[in-house]
Amino acid sequence: MIRPAWISTPLAGTAAVFAVLALLAIPLHRLTSGSAAAALTTPAGDADDSTATPAVLYLRLLADADKVSITTPDGTPVWQLDPAPAGEHDIDATLTLAHHQTELTLTASFPQSANETAVFLTVEPDHLASQTQHAIGSGQITETLHFSWPE
Amino acid sequence: MKRLLTGIAMLCLAVTATATAAPLKVSALHPMMADLARQVGGDRIEVFDLTKGNNLHHFEPKPSDMATMRSSALVLASGKGLESYLDGLRASLGKVPVIEVGKTIPSLTVGKDAVYSSCPHNHGHSAGGLDPHWWLGISNMKRAARVISKELAAIDPAGKTTYQAGYKAYAKKLDDLKRWAKSELATIPSGQRKLVTSHNAFAYFAKEFGFEVIAIAGLSAEQNSTPQHLAHTITDIRDSGVRAVFPETNTSDKSLNAVAKQAGVTVAPPLIADGTKSGKAITFEAVVHHNVNTITRALTAQ
Image 1 (cartoon, rainbow over the protein chains, first blue to last red):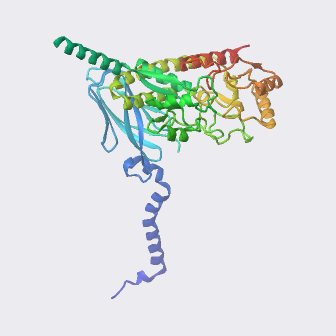
Image 2 (image 1 turned 180 degrees about the horizontal axis):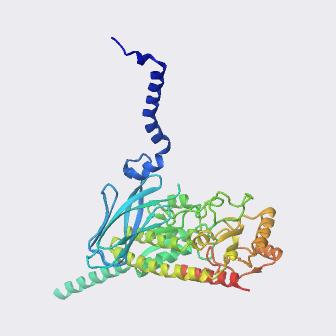
Image 3 (image 1 turned 45 degrees about the vertical axis):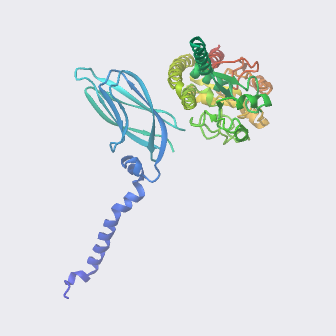
C-alpha cells in the first residue's frame, strides 16, 4: 500500500493529535462544566439525583379563566382546573426535584375579550420554603416557570 | 307490636345519631398544636392539651396523660426533636398514631442560618442544633394547619369537608394576621431589628419579619450561657444601639436582667415562646398579637 509522503511528516502528526483533542473537547467540557445547565434542561425524571417530593401547589387567579393546566416540561399533567374561577386554589402533588430544582409549564386560557391578567403559582415542597412565580398576559398564556432552592 | 317496633327503630336512630355526633378525641403535646387542631377540627373534635403550663422541652406524660392518649384517635406532637420521648411514646401507645406536625416544615439550624447572631464564637450555645420553635412563624403555622387537616381527614374521612373548610378559614385568618404583623413591625427602625431574648426561640419569627436573634440561653432555656457569651451579648447590644431586651413567660430572666443592666437597656414585658405558666388555653393568634405589640412598643419607644 502506497501512502502519500505528507502523512509521515511531523506536521501531519501534530495535526492529528490536535484533531483528536478537538473531538474530545466537547464531551469533556460537557462533563466538567455543564452539570448545572443540564439539570435545568433535562426532564427532571431522567436525572440521577432526582427525587419525588410531596408538595402543595397554590394557584392564584386574578380573573376567571376558562381552563388552567400545570404540566411538567415533558407534558406530564400535574394539575388541571376546568373551569378555573378567580381566587385561590390548592392541590397536593408529587414533584420531581433534581438538584433542588423543578420546572412547571403553566397554560391558562382566558376569554378572548378579557383584559391582561396574572396567574401566580406557589410551590411548597416538603422541607423547603414556598416559592411563587407568575405569568402575565391575556387570551392564551403559556409559560414555563422555574423553581429552585439552595442545596 | 307495630308501636313497639317503631319505638325500637326510633331508639336505634337516636343511639346512632349520638354515636356519630361524638367528637373525635385528639391529644396534643404542645399548646399550639392543640390550638391548630381546634381551629381546623372545630366541634367535630375534642382536643386535650396535655402540656398545659408545663415546660415543653422537658414534659413527661403522667399515667393519666397516657390514658388520655390511649383513648385518642390521634396524638399531635410538634416534632423537630422537641419531644425527645416520642419513640418511647409511640411504642407505648401502639396503634394510636403520633403525628409530628412540624416534620415537613423547613428547619433552621443554629450557627448555619444567618438569622442567629447569637454565639458567633461557638460558646456551646446550641450551635449546630436543629431549632424546634417553628410554631413561632406564621407561614409555618399555615403549613401545619394543612398537615393537621389531612391527618384528621385520613382518620375521619366523613369529616374531610369540615376539616378542609376549617383549614381554609384558618389559613385566611393567618394571612390576615401576617399582613397585620408585617405592618406593625415595619414601624421599627432597621437598626433596632434585633431580638434579645431569654432563650433561643424566636429565629423563625425573626426570619419571617427581618430580625436578628441574640439569645441569652440556648434552644432550651436550661442551656445556660457561658460568661464569655454574656460578655459578648452585652457588647453586641451596646454596639447595635438596641433599646430593649425581652424576657419570656416561661423562662428565668435572671441572666437577661443582668445583661440589660450591664448594657444599660430596658427590660420589656415578657414574650410568649413556649406557652404560658398559667396553663390557660391560648390561641396562636393571641400569642402573635401579644408578641408583636410587645416588640413594637419596646423597640419604637423613645
